[in-house]
Image 1 (cartoon, protein in one colour):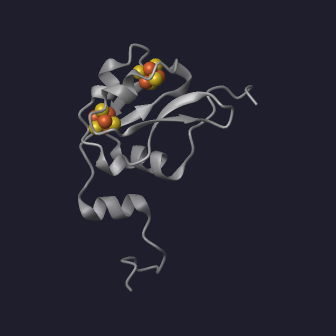
Image 2 (tube, rainbow, N blue to C red; image 1 turned 30 degrees about the vertical axis):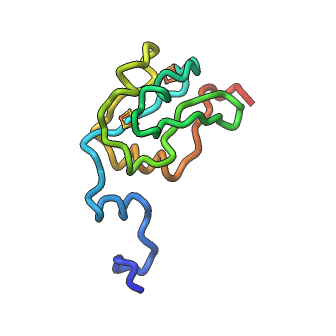
Length: 111
Ligand code: SF4
Ligand code: SF4
């Protein structure tokens, strides 16, 4: 089976999404340090995409488990009074973060 890459490496989830043309114009960018865990963004997503996750310190942060299903509507960002979600046009970076990284620590001193 072809990997679709000349170097023979497996296609990454971000590359696959680009190839499939499924990236919206914008994706949410979560800023964990600003989040108070109210859950409004989770309730606001009509596609049920915002999930409650905790980082390694056990601190709640919203997260997208299936970012390729996001339409980029911005409801999650609009309801957040803490400014913990912004819509970014750097969709490849946001997609990569959701797919390949765990939620980050809000503060380095939390262990
Ligand atoms: S609406 Fe904002 S403060 Fe509330 S859980 Fe979502 S990101 Fe956190
Ligand atoms: S931008 Fe819209 S579809 Fe995407 S996670 Fe937020 S509310 Fe859901």
